[in-house]
Image (cartoon, rainbow over all chains, first blue to last red; front, side, top):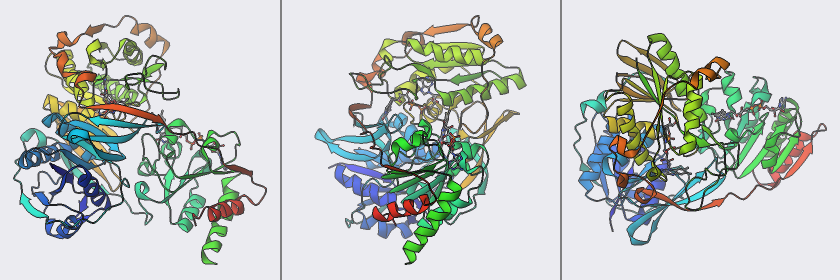
Length: 321
Length: 261
Ligand SMILES: Cc1cc2nc3c(=O)[nH]c(=O)nc-3n(C[C@H](O)[C@H](O)[C@H](O)COP(=O)(O)OP(=O)(O)OC[C@H]3O[C@@H](n4cnc5c(N)ncnc54)[C@H](O)[C@@H]3O)c2cc1C
Ligand SMILES: Cc1cc2nc3c(=O)[nH]c(=O)nc-3n(C[C@H](O)[C@H](O)[C@H](O)COP(=O)(O)OP(=O)(O)OC[C@H]3O[C@@H](n4cnc5c(N)ncnc54)[C@H](O)[C@@H]3O)c2cc1C
């Protein structure tokens, strides 16, 4: 069986759940190995071992940890070379990692699939992937025909399965080229934390649109009783009512929670592209003709300023009683 | 400053997009147009060219209809168009697309592009990888997915937002830049622009014109291929209630019944 590389998503060695998912998927294709970028591999090792990484390739180089795609791609290419002939490289979907995957595909001649929702072995050692296409109106199965298969994978694709392995650390030296270093980050402004769950990973998302008129407080209050993340339509974001990082849709986040609640959102195709794979969909809208109602499991035709506070009260009563 | 903008011709997202018999995008039965997200790149290029006195060349790789994407860009104000048209390109993957684009960009800019602008993602493939692949192939720095852009003194500067932070990016020119839909408000073609576009030069190049081997592109040489597709089953509309003072309570009841609270 060939090796399958998994790029580790971590903060200071704290390995994220999506990495455990990718290691689980990797075991279906071959022998999982982890690729760890940074200086804190010892903190990460136990968890990587627990989820089946036989080898942990470590790239500890400040030129790579800077958060830019080109150096990361060079690091991945160096690990691919060190590993020999890996079957696949699995990468957690994210803007920078996805672009690194793209550059890696050019460097290695491998086949690239982005935003996969499943990865499986196909006959003859190949790799088959599942993706959504055309605003999630289709589910597509693809065959990766050029090796290595380079696949960026969405979060929540496979329940992580423990599978103890050695996690032997193998350092890989990377000298980043001048052209890869030519783009630089010259300043970083951290965003204020809301204390609410991450939009992409949340089990429940409550979103507000133009219908809020700029007052998100009933949306936030309802979200908080449900322990939900808050999302927004582009109209609400463009109006400056909510940050762009909370936008749900084609050019925002794609979410697929257990429950999605759309408040004062009409349901344009670009918004649907980001939420229509949600398990249960609820909408509150004044206009009974709003296209969002075509998607809902439950809809309330009404004013969100009346409906949401009452629902918030009823939910917190139900939870506490 | 001479700017090359890559623009894609895509099936209209408002229509029922689907696949054709060979599992590639069905373009025959769905109207195509300039990918909306590329309008932001064209607008940004026009602004930079207007400020610096440069020229904007739009490049598209696509079938015959893709000339429409060029036309729209010229109507907005771009100066020249290049259409890479060759049957062998049908079914190309992102890597092959970037290979063809790289050659076309070089030729369009006489070997030395100063600034290459692209959209955040196409509205059909929506991979957001072509700008990075193009930068890799051209050996240029990438400043991608920026929501602000400043080009001055041989530098490009832009802001890129992630979930946790907003980064200021910088690179020297020449560079490959992709822009988000937050960056500007694309202009509508004016009547004057529509009339002027008719006289603007558009060149059509084949793979041979670009020195690209047909064996490196197309469906048969793609590194990944769609083998099957299924339409998402239409959602069945659930219960809709009209709020008569009890809408919130009913909503909470639904959530409880569905074991969501
Ligand atoms: C290239 C491109 C990319 C895009 N990407 C995205 C994207 O990622 N995400 C996205 O969301 N959009 C996106 N859009 C925009 C999209 O087309 C719509 O314009 C947008 O989703 C509309 O937002 P909305 O539903 O909040 O506003 P509207 O369409 O204005 O709808 C507001 C709704 O609120 C209802 N309402 C008003 N007052 C109340 C009230 N008091 N109580 C209850 N209901 C009320 C109205 O009946 C109406 O249905 C994109 C567009 C383009 C061109
Ligand atoms: C449903 C579907 C699934 C696909 N799956 C895959 C896959 O898994 N792997 C794969 O390698 N390919 C795949 N493709 C093919 C891929 O979309 C095309 O090769 C495409 O031209 C490049 O990718 P993109 O459209 O996603 O571009 P993106 O990377 O999303 O586009 C970014 C920008 O690049 C520019 N650009 C992109 N294409 C062109 C062009 N032809 N001409 C000019 N400028 C352009 C535009 O400015 C665009 O805004 C798929 C296509 C479809 C329709």
